[in-house]
Amino acid sequence: MKTSHFNDIANNVIQGVTDPLIAYAELKEYKREIDQAIKDIEPIALEESEKYGKSFELHGIKFERRNGATRYDFKHIEEWQMLHQELKNFETASKQALAAMKYNANYIDENGEQIPVPKITYTKDSLITK
Image (cartoon, rainbow, N blue to C red; front, side, top):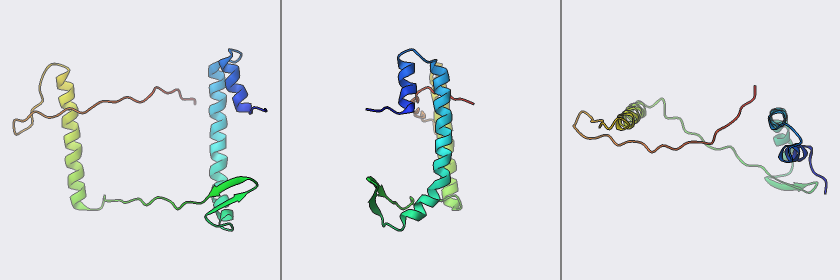
């Protein structure tokens, strides 16, 4: 079974043949180039797909054309702006309560109530190339 060039790069790193940082940078550059090429041809491919309907198979490859997602923008609504600002204020106060908790202190609002602290989660570390 034939492996791809990209799998070969990964396998060489895993086997200790290739420097992992060089391979990582090389694969990231390939990804950037591939992403740009896809972005460049996607409108043309979408237009071509209109000849075949929503779902079709061509040369053994299954395709399905999907409509774009609907997005709603509330920023122009005054009530939304006020509620959004209230939410931001609450989030700020909650972060301050968490910071105070690290010093065994409580963060109390203007009504004398303790402000709840947020849950904290972390994303995985990443390595970027420039």
